[in-house]
Image 1 (spheres, one colour):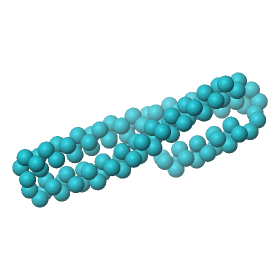
Image 2 (cartoon, helix red, strand yellow):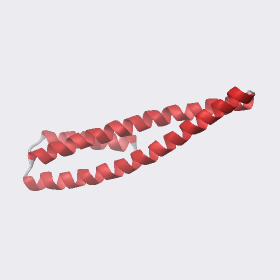
Image 3 (cartoon, rainbow, N blue to C red):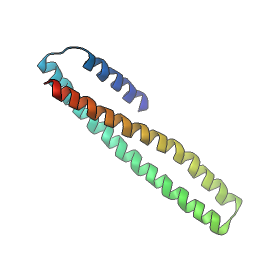
Image 4 (tube, rainbow, N blue to C red):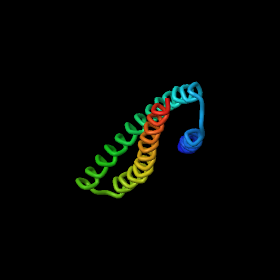
Length: 111
């Protein structure tokens, strides 16, 4: 997904750098609006997954602090190891969608 978003951000930057007719701008704006919707959905799903792993991590950490044990420590570390990439990816999705909003407004101004 990250590669697809990067490619689309590059494409839309190139599109905005060139001159286009009103119809081309209108068509691209509609496509951009659809893409924003898809990426917003992706962003919400990743937010929920990230929050779930954060809760799992905190629960495992609390259990480890209360009861101890090597198994709980391993579980806590595993949840943390999964949480960090999820946070990184969610951060990327959030920033990418924000960029797409800016590009949408730029196309809207052209018209």
